[in-house]
Length: 237
Image 1 (cartoon, rainbow, N blue to C red):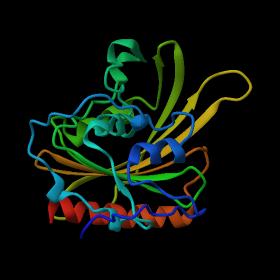
Image 2: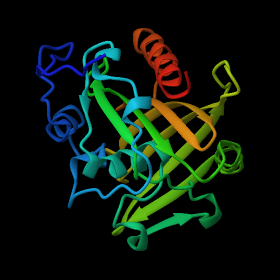
Image 3: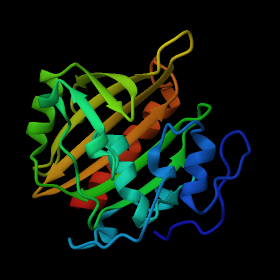
Image 4: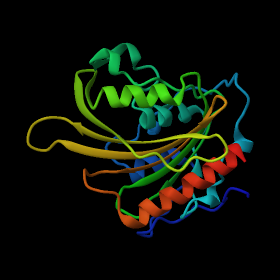
């Protein structure tokens, strides 16, 4: 399938620009998605995974490709690891709970809108060195951690939920994160639900992200399940 070339509309009638940087900043105001910040051109050394990714038209509302130079930021958001260039300025406590980072080399990502206000659906296919079992083990060991970047702190609550059905030797997992940022009377809450599949050093993510602590809306839950099924099929056949 060929990615959509027209700027798709969100459920509320807004246009999702073809350049996903503008889309990320518009859909998730306030820096919820760090893919808004990019710098320099990506220089992938791993094989390009474009042929193993879903396309824009696989989303319930056509999505936009995340530019290569922003994929590392999208992966940081999905995995909970520090954003590129912020590792030395980010403290994770307990330190042994730091999520394993995933390289953006050769990775391919798409971003589209969910049905709820300021919600998004994201897919990524990427090369990995750390087994998915280790990602799950660390998430189970660390149900709560604190990240501090340039003095700004967030509390991250992590849940490992029942994994999606496996197929063709694909290992799967489901991880939910709830991120509470800022103190005072009006903290910001962001939640994400990631369905993950992995085989032979390649991992796929299908993530739903929304600015609340409640459950995923039923319509978006079904859309996420369908998108994950398509992502697994595209990546692993």
